[in-house]
Amino acid sequence: MHLRSRSTALILVALLAPSCRNANSDGSSSGAPGLAPSTLGASGCIGPNQVFSAPQTPVAVPLATATIGPYSQITARQGSELLYLTGANATVFALDVSNPVPVETEVVGAGAVSFVLSLQGIAGTPELSGVAVLDATHLVLVEHLSNTLFSCDSTAHNSLGIHAGLPSTTPGFADGLASGSSGVARFSFGAPTQLVTTNDTDPSVLVADVGNHALRLVSGAPGSRFVTTLAGTGSAGSSNGSLSFSSFNGPSGVTLTCNHQVILSERGGNRLRSVQITGPNPFGGWFGSTATVAGSGTAGTTEGSSANAELDAPLAPLTTSAGEIYWIDSGTGVLRRKKSDGSCDCPLSLDCATAVTTPNFPAGHAYSLTQTSSGVLYVLDATGGVLWRVSP
Image (cartoon, rainbow, N blue to C red):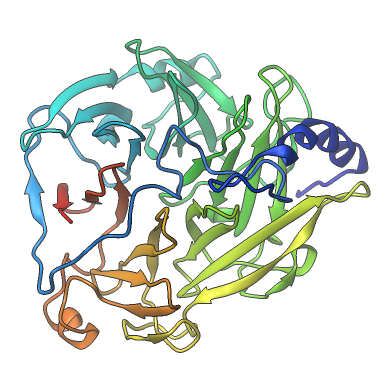
């Protein structure tokens, strides 16, 4: 059952109030509490706009030890050419991509996640998908067998534990404590999904809760973290407006813009949606609104204005520091872009019709993408087991 309580909201007013003082990159103040994108990871507002040379062919990046699995995803650490990959068998690797052949370092080995889950009485095959930089030394990960978030130390091998959520092989939908013996929050991670982190002393985590068709927030200091639902009813839909009545259809990708907006990709709704949080409601829930950023709702890969362009099962949105949004239309295997002028195109191809005929990547696969601070775009094909580089 999905629970939102008045006491939860009041606790979060105290937790999030200091983050209202976060500043935008231009030094101006933001009214959105706790939603400034991380300055350590690629949660959005990262790197310059790409300069594509259509037709442009991505280049495969060779991997020696890291194995890509069907749930695998990637992210980048800002200020370096370092990627983090969730691999097959619930592994995590750091990839130094400053040279054509990456230097690979195992962060979490096979069996480590299974061991932690066994202590919770959970047996089975774990799967890691979404990965984000939490702080200077830690990553946060989506774990599917237990429907929880894990965290791991990126500098110490196999140092990990559960970050938020009640470990259970049965999905759930409830707000509450991130951990504890009772009143613990529940997630539903039936498909690969993403998360991003914020720029706070105690970073918050925004989660695309794909199984619950909701956007969730994990916030607070260690030992007092709370999980709340920012928007989403638990059922599939694509309604805009007040957060209390907004709905999503299969949200599995999430990024943050420089002006603190959340961008969600709806794989089921064939849209990009925005979520603007203005503050917690002391009587439960949140103040704010949702809107459609791109997509008519009809499955397709076409150019046009944000309202008229068609998207096909979009995955893994990523915002740049200059305001563009990139994503993959997984239904057709085409890299997409929403430009600063609001129009949508297929930047690696001469036009979208050509892109659909000769797609940049295989259609129907699971993808994630990230960009390093230098402006190199990386696309991970989890289904095909290939990491691609798109150089500017």
